[in-house]
Length: 122
Image 1 (spheres, rainbow, N blue to C red):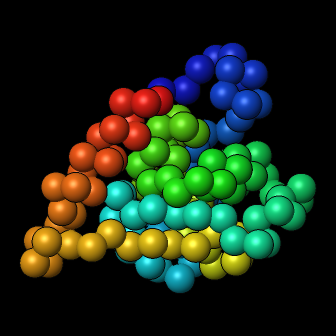
Image 2: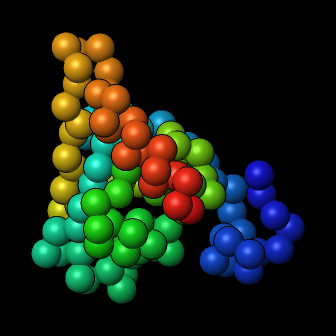
């Protein structure tokens, strides 16, 4: 949901789909589950030239954070957060830590519990 107050969301005055130029996948096309954790790399210290949402994503990843948590923090759909993360991974700012799956049928209960705890903390 967009606000009429551009200052409310860190100065965003364009629709969220414009952040990704309408893309639904990162340039590499990596399909990351929403519970995928990301962390910042050494290159993450040089974010001055990044757009606000990209810079904020890198700052959030100073500690392990999931894609869904990034979406919630940025107040963007998870698909947009996934593209932002993918772009930052491609550029070398973030590292992806794919979740282990339980027999290939999705995330383990432990991962889901950690994800739920992270969302409740917001």
